[in-house]
Image 1 (cartoon, each protein chain N blue to C red):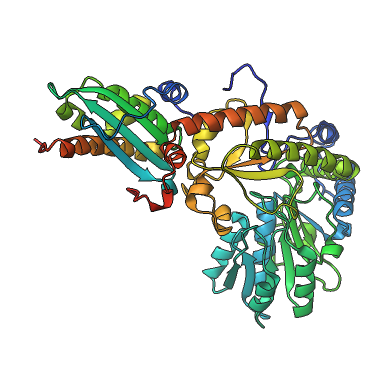
Image 2: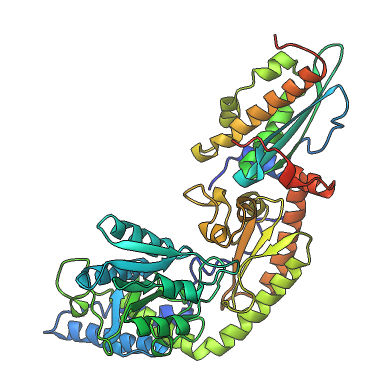
Length: 131
Length: 408
């Protein structure tokens, strides 16, 4: 399969690989997918208490090249965004940016799910309602 | 990691093999000066072509211990499988309508059987054990009075496991059932003798044995019993009426030469690939959490199939596929988006099937290729594990089976 240069770059030089301390109140963790399905994505955000701006994002992903690139891109996009801005990231934005082929669209859906799940985890930890 | 200036390393010989230069050399005149139609009986152009075809038929028959008249040329193993199975089902329909095959067969066999099921043929798909072998007692128990054909592959394309052909042959003879085998991955690479194996029909192809693509054969036994198949294509009645269509003379010439070379070089080829395959396998299995798929003894000498736990196959391949060619059982590499049905039939979970790599070596694989591949695959696995959340969880001692995954 021929992938776009952007995708290959994210795959070969993934941004923000790593682990944040999930026990911290300022960290939200999203773990989506299943090994049996061939992809598991763990996306974490660290949120500034005062401004509610995402100041750090990390990921680890078990999956194909598109899944890894989608998560790498997602962490790049998350940094510096407010929670509301982050919630509005749509999987089709990822599809367009990485030029994902149709059979790989599910990777972008997974990344969107991971973002939403990390935000939800942070909100629950901090007793925040969705606005 | 991979660099573009590195040479390309080919470890996917089960997909197809490069053509041996000796084969190409033999074929070339048959595209230009000796272009005749082998069915043109009344002029020298036809005679030259016919002579070349006869000679190739002998070379191929010799490789598998058959009579030249038992070789039917086709376009490849898929056509041979179709012709054998559909042809037998049609020819012997008054005798019965039941076929037995394996869950791990190639799609050319499985989908042919599925197509026949729509026409009222009954098919039993036997399971295999953890190593990929058929259970002979189960096979015998599956034979009914209406069984006309047992179709069991010789060597599996994904894991290289060799089925107990002789024993199956004996069982089929005992019950008066025809025995067909897709021997695509075995012929030309290990000794194959149709009489010794007891097969009545056998499919194989040129491009898996350093010959050209687009040419294959079906062995159809002529004596005790004399086997017939109903043609699946109407036309000029070539190949003793079983397969119409102008013969692919250059392809046949090349196929014949490839068979001859395979016979000459077989001992050397086997020793060569066995040594390199064992090195590759041993070195890769020194890594943590690598699972061997298949049977350690009953297998082809050039194939190894390994699952690298907590790493997804397509992603892993992307770390080195700019210069190393191999295959994965991962869903992301298959047209169907399902992980390998062969590995699943062995009882592997989907996660292990997603994590598998198949490496198949060949006559032209070098020690340098293998050394480079070992290094690149190791680096790739380590890189992907650094990225893998489930590898991290495994390392932290989390029981992955107890995790409630958000399946999608």
